[in-house]
Length: 181
Image (cartoon, rainbow, N blue to C red; front, side, top):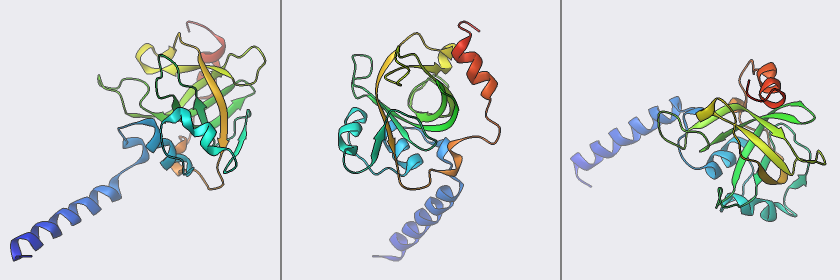
């Protein structure tokens, strides 16, 4: 390796290390799967809808949300690869906040991370099998109802940035229970 190549490699490594040190989980732009893996510590790979099956025997799976758990959305026409998100706060029996990536548009593009987003259980049996998700594009719960497999609970501490210091519990409850607010 010549002197120029070594200097270039050194500069790239220095810039990369400085960028990584400043990077935040919430600066992420990309797909939901790598984001959920980084935020939850749950080591599952592949399309989001496959996480539920892959977790069987490796992680606890339930129909009860818990902070740090991953909710797995089923594959549908609107979500051909499903979706995964991480529970950031449990607000009450049918309302939680989640942190995820690649849902709403921000600055005209998808992929950005969103923190403490309202998720509302609209399933008839109160079992979290059907949900509505807060959608930044409309500043409220979107019109779609999404089928969900359940929650995967990891065995490591989730990322510190999973929730904000002062999440808006009241806003989450209003989003869920006061349509059109």
